[in-house]
Length: 110
Image (spheres, one colour):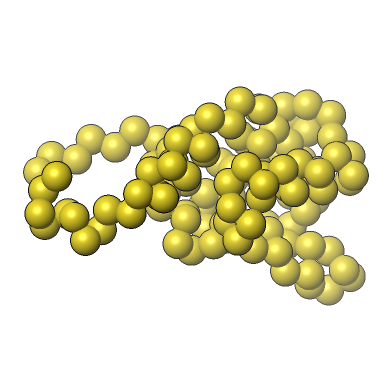
């Protein structure tokens, strides 16, 4: 490994990258791609995205988000409840770049 890049290498990030890439469910895939922008998204917005892949209701969506936390990390997705008790979701800032790298191919010339 390049000695200049060694301080930035975190072995658990590699494992997490492979776990993200290993998600085969199209609804989970679509939700993670939507969350990869690093912004807060309401539950209804994410359900609309997931419903394009397959039918999903409120309970199914909650179970899907819980499964994502179990597959990836418990602190991977942040949840905030705003007005009218509607939950908002966001990928934690530490993992946004990793999620983007899992779904998009980067050609870096050094």
